[in-house]
Length: 215
Image 1 (cartoon, rainbow, N blue to C red):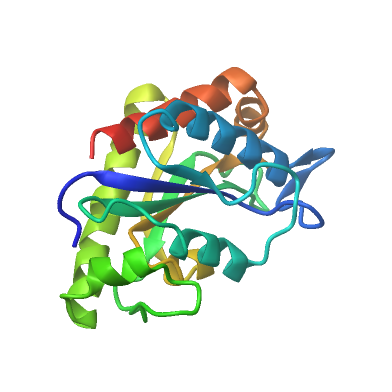
Image 2 (cartoon, helix red, strand yellow; image 1 turned 90 degrees about the vertical axis):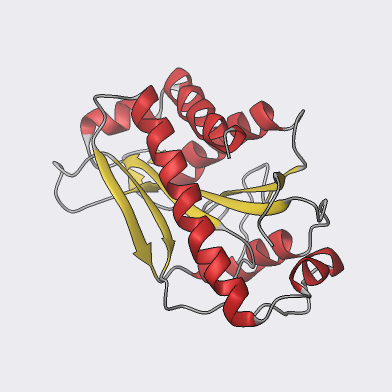
């Protein structure tokens, strides 16, 4: 089901509204990730069917984010992807760098929910659940490694913490290739100064967009 080109990009800015995410002083994760998500959307919108789960400071439940993604129509000759944007935090101020999460290989998606679009159902209709999960796992790894390589090219001195599997709700409940990108650590002074810099934010968004364009 994942032959052809990307035909839908769902961009998920983590947290929002009453949920600030990670905090350092008066700096909130929710604001950083919304800014990066908007830059990513602006880069891609002219060439892709592109959707933001939120475009302002509102709170969304995790399932609402997944429902937004799963309910979208798209060109079934291509395939959809879900990109969740986050910022990390740690008790140690020395922790720094970016990392990318994909769902655990063993976590199986059950592909139908009330929100699932007819497009998504038809995309999967000729495949059994095991095959779809194998495909999604394979494309998750490809998507994550392509984004990782692009970020490394754009930020050669930035610490790469690698690709990790995680039991994360938005990766488990979006029925498409999905990654969650931790842009850096709000608790590290060097990372933080980058994370709040609009030029750095745009450069990071452009690196992610470049990866998507190369898929």
